[in-house]
Length: 365
Image (tube, rainbow, N blue to C red; front, side, top):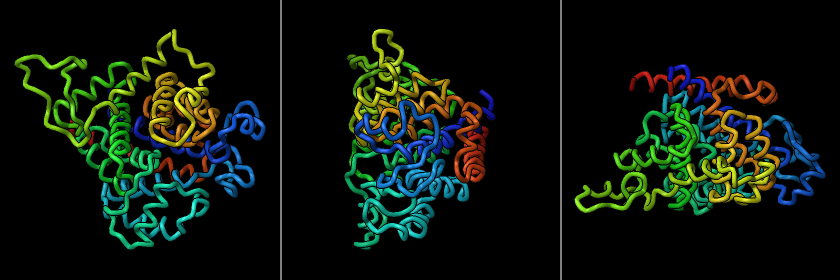
């Protein structure tokens, strides 16, 4: 794989996430598919305005939600600092985001503020706690939606990817399961940016990184999930996370997408199979499934994510990053890029981060 591929895949992952976020601004959080179809028709195929009284009312088609705003904030920090600088990230949150919030759901840039961000704001602003004591127990995908940029930056450094994604996650979400799943998603995305395929073997490759100590997950079984044998050297040291199962899930989703006896038709019904709500354990299986089924078809992946209703913005954002990393920036239809507000700035940031990832690849070549 050429270094140009690394840069293109990295930029594709970032822009894929922005596209997924903006696609969700209009039809976000319809838990009644009948109401979703009533307001947006049988098939949503692009950016839409939110209806009055909905979560992002007042925004226009092609604009970003607050999740996209925070991803852009994270991206700017990474690009301008040349990597993850936690003090700089926290300063930007203090100066750029938190002054626009008031602790209520329907306020701030992008219209809606997530539970985990409201809790962090409350601890940081109202209680005056230092960063590091600001995280809460919300089980949504909020941290994944910003740390995916960190994962892209450190795609070729699995250990640093895990530590920086984990460190950033606990600023707003401290539940061990959520942190584990967030780091695992970042590890998967990093592998795709490097050029590995989202296939049945990807989890085994991630488990190799567990056994070499690069990924901080505890493991008991040996290679290919076989039981330990007498005389084996034993598992690696106990990791940060009690189980490697978050790394095993993606390949099971691949198997489901590839098995001719398992059909989710149309694919947007993945939301009904894995669940429409916000929690990571609903969102990640659906995102992995769509990214495996449509690994070469960015448009189908994000549109099926959106048309499934529920927390479709996160589903499209996470699937968009995974598929964008597989197709590269060139695989994202031009109409999605052209329709984004501030597209040139976002593309510039995505390409700059891609250049950083490429530079890291060159340094390790």
